[in-house]
Amino acid sequence: MRIAQVSPLFEAVPPKLYGGTERVVYSLTEELVAMGHDVTLFASGDSITSATLAPMRAEALRLDPTVVDWVAIYYRMIEQIYSRRNEFDILHLHIDYFPLSLFSRQNVPFLTTLHGRLDIKEIAEAYATFPESPFVSISDSQRQPIPSLNWARTIPHGMPRNLLTPQPVEQTYFAFLGRISPEKGLERAIKIAAAVGGKLKIAAKVDNADRDYYENRIKPLLAQGHVEFIGEINDAQKPAFLSGATALLFPIDWPEPFGLVMIESMACGTPVIAFNCGSVPEVIDDGVTGFIVNTIDEAVAAIGRLPELDRAKVRAQFDKRWTARRMAEDYVNLYEELIDKKRLELAQAAD
Image (cartoon, rainbow, N blue to C red; front, side, top):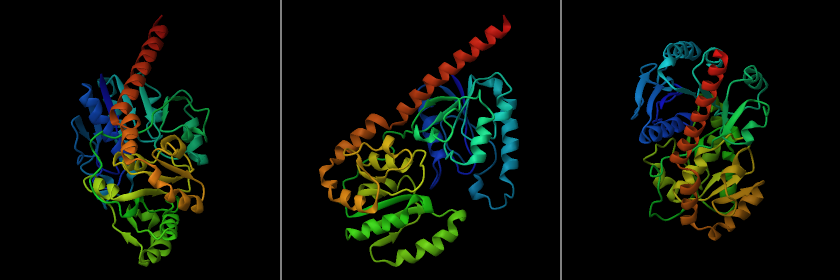
């Protein structure tokens, strides 16, 4: 199958440090190539892939401080991909609503995986403008703000089986991994660790949009003796970081569409204590791979139950549910369905 994967340009594929969507695109692309498909990856030129790379610009947007209007770059990118559409059996888009108007007016099958939150009025209205376009959700909960959208499938994320693995290290702290922003709940994590007299290690990115929040709310808390701020880490650093944690704290306060860090933690055999928001009940097997809680007090109580969990079973559940091969197989099934549907539509139109 000739497949186009269209990645965001904010990070390289795979990201050098933090990056969610681009990391998923990388895992999917590599697995599709391993399965024997002919894949072209439209991404930044500093990406690394086994597929055929079609560079849309020299480097990721995040690394180029000269960029003033990134939307203009996307505008040009979409036109370039459109001009090559007939080279593919299917086009898989990961760049939100930007391509929908153009690609809805042509005959090559395509789909859009939505990676972000949908509970924003303007975003919901934009997607609802294209009632015939097929969309993939990354959790069932993600669909709730726009339940009537043309949802083709829910396909949760997956990761390469051996990218992150359990390491033989002692568990001496709690971990917080990802991004520092109000909705990610770092303030809660600091309180939870303090309540049980535990150490919290923070491996996280600070976006420019969250810089004031970090300076005013988080930075003063980092002086507490039980808190250690590490900063961003890469994939090579994650196995030791996560394996050394008694648990990953994921005390979010927003409708998380998926939460990749939860399955990264599971890959290392580390259980997750997560607040019951968004996709959490779909990702965490309560009492097996972690505990789902609603309050700080419940999180503290859950820490007392961590000895009940078997870290080998946490990893086994990752192998069962969260590998990139499972994700890729799910997408291939959908690709075939959409290709067959388009062929039938074109044949009926020709009669």
